[in-house]
Amino acid sequence: MLAPSRHERGFHAAFGIRPGDPMWLEARGRASIWRQKGIRENARNEMEQR
Image (cartoon, rainbow, N blue to C red; front, side, top):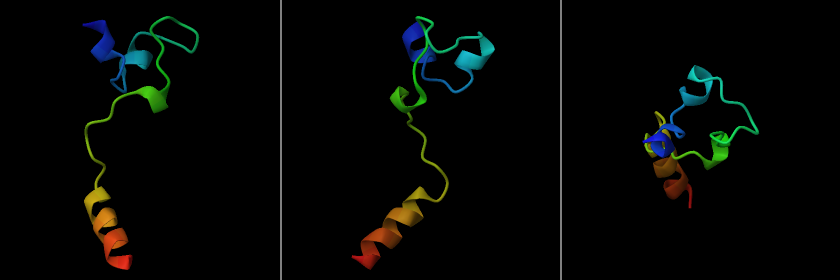
């Protein structure tokens, strides 16, 4: 169950994992399933502008 944990924001800080460690995963490579607040509105505005 370690692989999914690598994608959590606090995982690296909680366990002191740093770049170069085997469990390190760059932020841009981490999965993100939650939408940021306002992203739907931004997408709607972009579509309306086209």
